[in-house]
Image 1 (cartoon, helix red, strand yellow):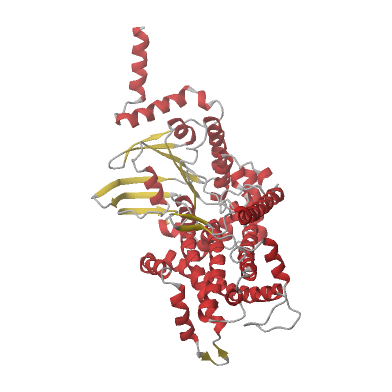
Image 2: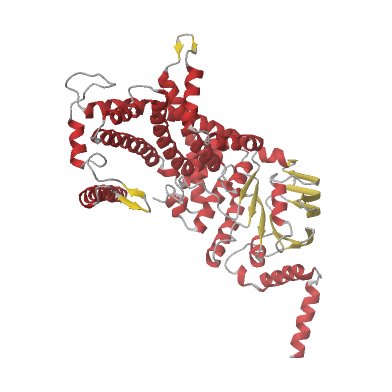
Length: 295
Length: 272
């Protein structure tokens, strides 16, 4: 039953992808070369090879040999190798940022749940924090971090990337978790009080399990945010080796042939999907705590 | 013997944004060990508030509350009472057995003892076949039974029940009442039972405490002497006589004695 549902969902995803590809190719073949304009504004892109490469061209770009540039690799490496390599680096930074963000978000949520005054004092700042543009923040964090060292620990640039990723990740976790912690109904909190359960036991046996349905969507947002944050941070602080920098490098190289840029963008999307899939696995593992889980 | 609950001069005033509301005023009540007492009255008469004061979920504005000769707070911390609510209030992510084990788990009883006790209680409430089910798979009546088993887990001397059968259909409700009479007798626990239903209060209780609203006061305390309850009890004239008595007490607290009522019935017959 469960497996059948997931198979069906996978099928829909596949159908969606095929449809998207079909639309892309159809527009490229039959759309006007100069794009579609409405009142002088282009609302659909040009269909030239420079703007919209054929999907097959993008496909071939993956297999094309890497040609130096910012990343100098051995002669046999292909574009795909570079993309996978870069994606794994970004994934590592994003995962670190995600972990930091989740821990910080959860701690903030616990604090806000415990003390009403903390919620009143913190929540506006937490919301405000997300309105600060990441691009502005990235150089600051790098500057603060750069050169700082404690004992044998030295701050490295990738750590700045992770911190920026965590900056995007902590927000949905803090907000979702605090709602989840407050979600148990009066009958449950009264029961725990009758049972003379203290704060800690109520947290472990009631509040945390009850917050799972709120936490899962938050984690999904946090995972996506960590990946996006990582990519943006790489670009804005100029850290080499990740997928963000690779996209930039390819787009600088691409004169008339954007297929590599598209290939790298696809690589970045796969990375985002991978992050979402990891959360999906966590979600499956915690099915017991879903609202109204009857199965 | 020492009483299970003793309340003297208890009042409770809620302070709201606009003025204050007197929910309970000058309540004196003593409940003996093993006694079954129902609190009945219209909405807003403070019966649930009274139950929560006994449970130390609310602190009274004045007066003293003793449970098992201890302060209500101490009694709560010592788990001297079990509580059931109108909604069963089970944790959906736990199995039926784990729900019954919850209070034992919270108080550090070891696993094997916990398990044995849970199975014993589930046997008592007739749910042995559902130990590994989850609450959403059970009917409302079954969920309430689990809640009762959970409340009894630590063999409390007192059971506080806040309209536990309020959401059940009539048939299930009567079956649950039969079970509760049996369970109360088997465990020897005193019960304070809040209800809206007059027949329910009369069927279950040794005494029915009739409350009147604004401010919440005890209007009357009606003793129920129906002997051992069984299927015939519900159809006996004595049962209906007490129901009438409670109903009249609720209506206007004009206390018509049983003798007066008998005379009235005779007059009515004579007129025919």
